[in-house]
Length: 358
Image 1 (cartoon, rainbow, N blue to C red):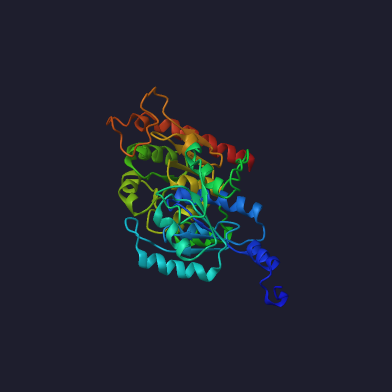
Image 2: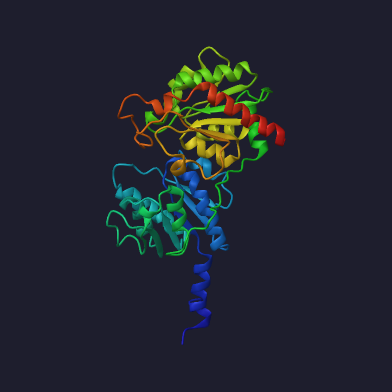
């Protein structure tokens, strides 16, 4: 008979399993990373006593500080184009120290599953892909039947075969007001009394970018109407920001630190963005957000959070949505045909609604 004092009874092991932490291995694009807060909420409802951690890159790490329900983030920057076995094993040693009982592995790649496998995490959940049958032991099928990325991520947080809930919990990012005030002071923005419209002109792939000339025209209209304008993005958007700001008093807040964009969006009265990661950040913060969609479908790729407006061309284009990073026809009309006056009017309506509610 098993020694009851050893702590190794079936009941003890079951209790340990019910308390063991869960690790989420997310996609590391900003928008998909934000979507994983839906996964955190589903896991909290299913396993209220189990801590939830998430892997992150240095780029996405600031987001984790504002995600309710997340215990901690483990930051690692693995190369995208190689397995990097030595780094994977070092990460596995770090994961093993945490005693994870479950890992949810969102990407369908070999390398995403390696560290959880090397760490000996007891339950490794993920969709079948890249013949990684021995790396996972809770293999899920049916990914192709889930057309939206958020549905695929959510399905891994549910029991095998379970139907998705009619309403998924929307992502939330919570920023303390004192942190916003301190950031504005550091950036010399504390004295700005005008309502702020934040613009996010970047996107992965040029076809998803509303033209910089259109953003510049929108900026001039907003400034003339008494609004402040901040242009947000990463270092790759510096050139776009310069074209948009021009000789106006709009502020270029692009840079390397995603935290700047998070705090700017939390501080803004409204945000106008292409289909990009920052649109998901703005929506999860609760900032009234206007999404500009050209080659991509809002149903597939818009944030789960309600948007203040979804802007698409009224032109009849048989080629959209094409979901291509570069316009294969060369005319880019799905974006060029969206007029600055239309976006300005939608922004004004969103701001008026906020003022009415306030």
